[in-house]
Image 1 (cartoon, helix red, strand yellow):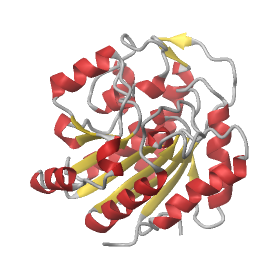
Image 2 (image 1 turned 135 degrees about the vertical axis):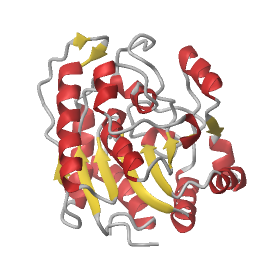
Image 3 (image 1 turned 90 degrees about the vertical axis):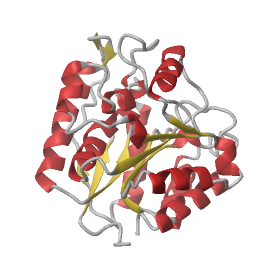
Length: 283
């Protein structure tokens, strides 16, 4: 497989408005500071204005939409083969995933490693937080203006929810309606990858994008996230799983998101960098 950094756009996109927590910006910035001497990043301009308003049932809508436009412009200009992203909240995924999906003509499988489904719409969201909506947008539903900015839309069979264990009722209904693929944290902890790998092979997905929300990890192992959720993937098992994916598939996209250290910030960030180094993404 080609080296990951060949023809790769490395993005630093510290958007925080989707979570409503400015600390999300700081978490992404710490990771960036540890990595930027090794690899060059293109930064997506991100507003630091703390005051947010709800517009169109989305908190911080104006900032989120403006930042999305900038992300689309920068990615379109670079026209990369691969994208590595250090980001803030999960809402940053719209531009990179939809771009790579278009580039690879929907032969892209998206592995959504996340404790949550991120499948709400503005109308169904109990919080109006956009970081609970991006996967639904990528599947073509949600705020029309945001959906229309995406380079393409995913089909349900391209999406694999891995380690998800906390859903709102509308999300569960959507998962059942669209028959989205679910793989439990327990299966990853037991190194039971056969069903996932077989499904990917049979569907003939040639490229892989990994969305890594750090809250997919068991909080006893790694509590440095905005929404710690029990019964997650153990960090050592996550590392093994990512290595196997890297060895067996063409990894064209990878994001690390929702890092929110509350103490021992540098040590927590070094754990994330160590995880990236173990699968040869940041060297």
